[in-house]
Length: 222
Image (tube, rainbow, N blue to C red; front, side, top):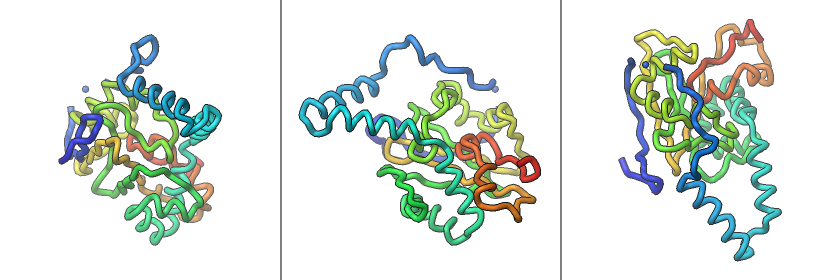
């Protein structure tokens, strides 16, 4: 496995359990991180060199802030109703997303399909790399040191604390995101949803389903 520029390696871990729901991270009143300082410096330099304007930067930030998990849920719902699209989504998520007039950005996003035998879980062990172009801003718990550590060492217990209890014969695969590669989980379609429309199916899919800490809501509860 090769290291990437922010210093942690991209990997997939097949690990079993054994500890506490991740607490809210200490995000306020803490010094700026190296990456935050670098981000601010690059933004200031781009504006100073007139490569982009402050207004263009503001609009881009507004756009990123407007992205919600609805984008990802639409991809999941289409994959549930169209096997050909599902295959294309798994093979090349960026190309598949364009079929729904969706630009998911330049960073590759690998879509990992849950099956009755395998459950996928997403983490970024060093910082908080995340498929923002599909799911929006990551939740605080995803960025916490506790989740980043324990998702690797005891994923089954972490899932249980989110209310997701899996049988011991289900393998848990943990995927470690990097600056150059992100992941999204394609959850299994709930039983009893055969007659639901694609729009209604999308309503069953939450952000946490696409991170892997939760399962889609049942069709009967929709």
